[in-house]
Image 1 (cartoon, rainbow, N blue to C red):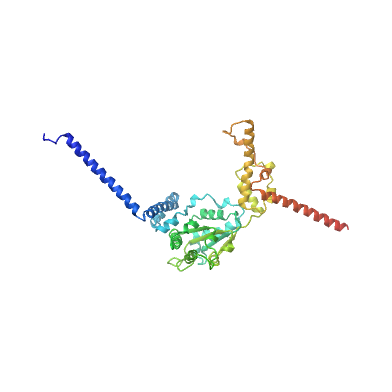
Image 2: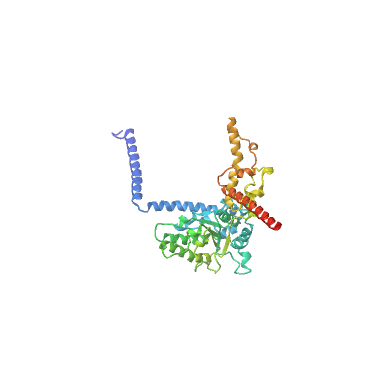
Length: 402
């Protein structure tokens, strides 16, 4: 055997090859890292990848397994999946605000006391938006409105109506946040507004919901920032401008749904583009009764000691949200009593029999101050009104006697 040709030489050669390969791999990753740090757009590229993945996931939820199973092969060929849509970077940003109807747990049946508004929304919004063929043969006027505004005091069910509308209609729902349209770069906010409508056209029928719309599309003023005025102008141009209809001349099946408790602060041009306006006011006695029935539907109630009529009268002037919080606080009364009872006897709280918790009684709504000060004030007012009525009656009797 020639010198230097033994096993030791081969092992040394093998080691050298491994070291050379490891050095090349490490050099590749070091150079790649350095170049990525030197690239000023590296963070933007990572953000774009993240947005693309998030928007694809949102579009995939819109397709839904149930819808795919119900389609025939021919229909699938005619109607491509939303997941396969090609979106630009601004549309991907807006797509992150997409909400699948199946992800919303609120239905019209969960809303108490707004039956008239719900029926009007079904007839004038949901059916024309999702079933246009039922109306197009009768008249071109029978189409979904371009905008719907829900206005009224806080806590009266405006946002719940919007959620239920998205759930019941089955349309693509874009829950547009104010922060989504706010960009530091000049002109990017306008491009995002453009993306709202371009994405809605691709996904139509679509509903674009803007909560507290007065903060985004408020009245234009002379001292307003230029960027804010440009966003409003861009919004109105796409909403009801030259590009608001399809190539065939039919109006796009896009609905702008707004909610506000300051309707007086919304720009007049925006109000004109929202022909359907529904006032969602404080609930009446009948509506408050229905709200109590819905909220306490799955709650244990002591019917012998529960006066619903008194609670309906005592909650006058309270919103639906206030009534729900009052019921939540009252429901804690029996649980609080059980905890104190077991603690005083030194019993363990690990196992609690639901049968040990008593039902809610009327007094539970008045034993805690919490958010129920309005009920106490209403009861005081009711007592004062009763005393005034008794005094007026006694005065009238005195005059008749004289």
